[in-house]
Length: 105
Image (cartoon, rainbow, N blue to C red; front, side, top):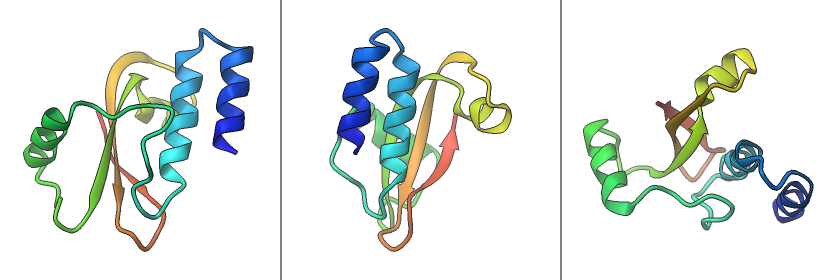
């Protein structure tokens, strides 16, 4: 399903990076365990680990995806507006329930 919608959006709206990122966020939030990387690559492994340590996230208990976004996901979620800013979105997986957004900054 995600491959079909991604292909369609790339063909119909090839210059809309934010649409591609929204589809990717939906993909990553769809799972209980961290899925394989598709549609949008995470930030660099070293940078990701540094960020997880700085935020004191429990990387022994949970798995994380840190996505680079071209918009403010908090503003989008709260106000349904697109604010163009480079941000990161941290998604946490516990293996038993659907993923959740831990931090958007």
